[in-house]
Picture 1 (cartoon, helix red, strand yellow):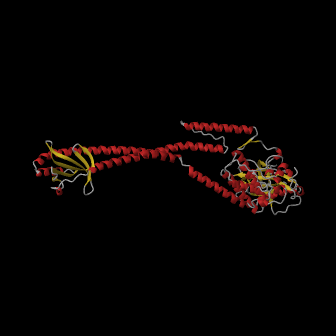
Picture 2 (cartoon, one colour):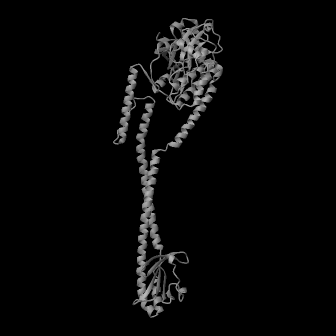
Picture 3 (tube, helix red, strand yellow):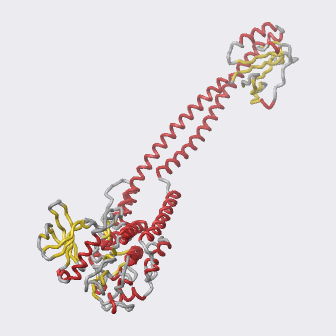
Length: 569
């Protein structure tokens, strides 16, 4: 091949098929790199193959779809027919599966849905691909976007072939050929859907349904034997998806999906069901550690601090109450001693003077002196003078300290106070009773201040615990996410990935264990490649023999001889 083909500068071969060779080319007019496909010399000499090769340009050139490779130019230079098309720097599906071993179910569905959409578009425009297989599906992005390649043996359904160019023409890849394609019968888009079913079978099971053996025997099995039971590598594959594969692989085209859009509808329903299942699983079970640990630590500290504060508050309140009792008891005893002589002399004026003087104390809300008959002789409440002392309810008594009793009472306005009831004695003789009421407002205010201070302390402590626990858990989540990401790389077959972070805790051991595992897996992979074997999730599968190659098969076979028994090898 010359360095130039028409106006295109050729820069080396990048691929070779059964009928064609693909070169990397440069278009100087628009300064763009292209893929230049030419017919192999042994086929270019024959009119029927030249016609079929150029029919690819007429087939694919009419198709404008994001999932189909674009054709820019078609022509002939120096007797060599060529097609200038989009250059894709992207791996094929075959390469991706070899690299990642097994694709997730939803990724498989995304790929097959896109291929089905591209085929449905081509079929609606009268174009049948005839060679759907992993090598003809390019994965153009990591998210799984695809383009269908190589309409090299595509057929326009309504075209009229020149004499010698049709008849017993059989082309395709044996593993992926439909029964009607093998028999060289008239085909339509349902033949491509059969091939897509084989592709889906291969993605799920790791092999095609009729793999292995010589080509002739393989074609006979496709024609006559039932499709082997599909045993998916992923046991979670839904039965509905397996039913889709069975329908696609029906030997009678009338029993298959009739259009790509019909297939897409079922696949999308399956994908939606898988998405719902994933969302329910994640919503039910996944609670971020930083949230869980923060809430747990906060709740634990809150309960602990609350219990501690309750104990402290109770003891503090009791201590302050005892202090108030001591103060009231001392004050009552002093007043009883001071009024004893005046009560003995029945000097009510002197007693009332003492009562009025003590009433100036804001803490004293009630003060009354009664004689031995129980009649009030002096009081801060003039309405009680001459009346008999009320009987104190025993149920309100808080404490009895010797002859003194301490009671919890309320005044007419509902304000609570402590009442100290003590005898007035002179030389061991009881002359009457003294009752002193002390307000509890100061005690209550002190208790409230103490309580608010304790609550503020608890809130500050909880805030510190929440913030500390949150950031500590985040520091824990970072290495966990790093380990999860690394394991994800392993599941995608990227055994060269290593964790470079070093830590001075238990994660260092986990990272070292991961790196050791990755070293072992990478070593085993390299060893297996060196032995000429290919690793798959199902085990070690020996390479296919030359007789059962996966390349596109091109044969001439008269229709009369291509019956139910298959093709002559």
